[in-house]
Length: 468
Ligand code: HEM
Image (tube, rainbow, N blue to C red; front, top):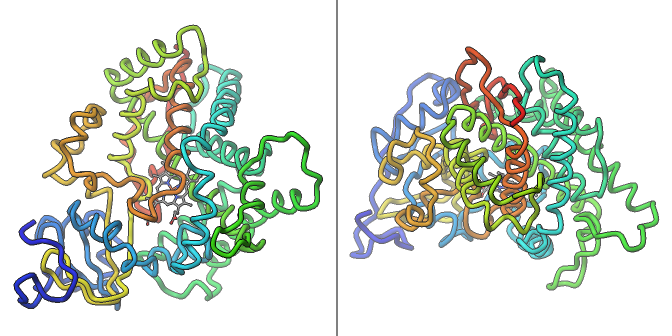
């Protein structure tokens, strides 16, 4: 980058800031037709033409695409107060997420909620939930055990979806979710599809009762019902004495240090739903992509098996204390999150005019960071399509700018569940890899990513089970 990142609309030498190069789209539909056809291709085209910063219009929105680690640190960390979540993607997701942590544009509310909830997501607190992660993975393997060996390939996206939901539900509510997990999954998938399409074609408004908007309403009611059954039960039942506190009871008793008050029930409901949504699809997809890639890279799989066997010795299931020694497992997870970053759209809205690297960013601009593309930036990733966990060796990490890799975001709004997710994914992977190989079925086609609100494997991942 040529100049420092400045604070006013003038550069260091008081020259007026430059205009950001504009990508013109003339498709007669305000850019939406082109964007909808191939969102990632469209955004990549702009980067190839202009480099790490350019602007374009989508309908009446002024969008700026950023693809340099310094720009990303500027927006997410250094000037995070100035870039809020009043951005298109969060406005679209708000019918589901409401004023919970993930999407709320209200900075005061967010600060208060984050202060109250953050203590329950530190590595130390997460360690208390590790047994939920390994117990639920072990139960999944017992269900796999009962499958006929010559049966059809396993729909691993579905399996990992249920696993992720069972783990987060046990950690939140100390409850077995059983069949309710599938109902939540179906409702979530429907909402993701309707809202994902709405992102690329926002007509008619969601309040207009088209058949898909009516289905979306029902899906939201289902997800709300899933959460409220557990909250209502907790409010009416006696709490068991000596019970290890789950996240719900921690949230119920959390008090803000500022005003000494807790969350009201509506806010609690929204936060619990945000945790379910935040935890469900992201971890599901990471595990599904991980085993998809492992099945296609036997050399990486063998190294994983060697590590897991060495760390576990006679045991079949890892525990939290094994985490520091599962270093290669963690490198695989980091590399999967690079290639298929599930929460790949980090959008912000500029509250005031700003200057980034000498370029003027007017107030009201929608700023777009796309981690799918950033994680393939040729200046920071050699041969970016290659699956290579060695990129995450301590030596290689030290050579890259920190903000070239942001699967969990960065700054004050970094993923609240980052430690939870990494613990869950590493422990689940190690538990599975100790017992099973997941193998590509003969003639199976390549699985392509589907860029909806999150990035997920189009048509799912289907693999064959092989006992080790
Ligand atoms: C591989 C798994 C996960 C990935 C890749 C992921 C990714 C992200 C990203 C990128 C953000 C920031 C979005 C932004 O800045 O615009 C975020 C926020 C968030 N995530 Fe995650 N997430 C994962 C798992 C989880 C889990 C397991 C939980 C809960 C247990 C969770 C809860 C949240 C919450 C509550 C926020 C909002 C934080 C705030 O604004 O204060 N996530 N996540």
